[in-house]
Image 1 (tube, rainbow, N blue to C red):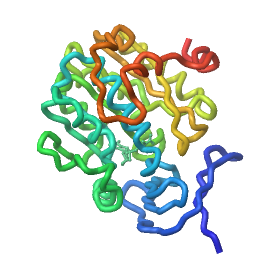
Image 2 (spheres, rainbow, N blue to C red; image 1 turned 90 degrees about the horizontal axis):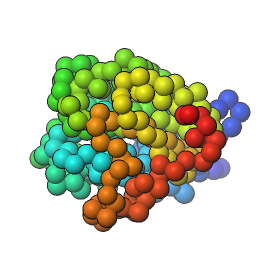
Image 3 (cartoon, protein in one colour; image 1 turned 180 degrees about the vertical axis):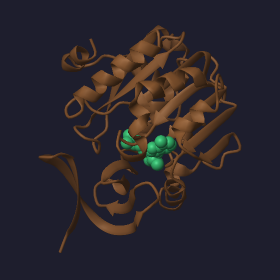
Image 4 (cartoon, rainbow, N blue to C red; image 1 turned 30 degrees about the vertical axis):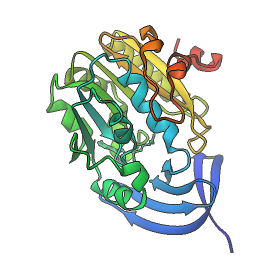
Length: 275
Ligand code: SAM
């Protein structure tokens, strides 16, 4: 008898993956945490029934959260990752020698613990001496750290459960205040097929707080609809004004200097969403 994991991406549509092994099924203090082995995408972390990351396609999301913003800021010495307990964004941040210190704040220590054990290629830089890992609510952390960061990356779950307040105008105001005078932030902002209203509301809120707002996309096969968006809010630097010829080739599989600006070219139906 085959075992399949199905994520209902809407009430009437989803994806399903054949499972070969189950490592963890645990209700943590904050969410249901499942770590499973899938035939197609390898080891998969699922939180509250939603795919978080898989060994086969994780590079897309983690590279596209980290590199556009870190190559837009000219000197990203102090960075913060809100969420990101699987360690994938931190692994990409460590490819930037200008980063002196990266702080990761995830509300759920169990995500960090199980990612280190079952997702070692993703979590491998969490013990880097340049990294400080904190278990706390990201919302609280940013309010306690004014004018502290050059770059903030919000790698949170969907706006439900513990991440519900990470998609609010108050949170973006808090991000603005936790950034230095020329700081930049980026947040994953879901998909335009099933979460168009979320993309619109985030864009409206971020525009009320930041002078420069840009949205870019990437293809993530295990995320709802496969078309994912990211929203960048910047106090001074514009990602579209970066000199791509000055961007070094990193050890990446999705992001490249050639893709830096191209990622901001959106399908018309997505452009219309954020007009
Ligand atoms: N790439 C995934 C996505 O786009 O949905 C996110 C992956 S990462 C595992 C999401 C993390 O956000 C989880 O580990 C969760 O514990 C964390 N998280 C949720 N709410 C949080 C909060 N308020 N503060 C800090 N971390 C939070």
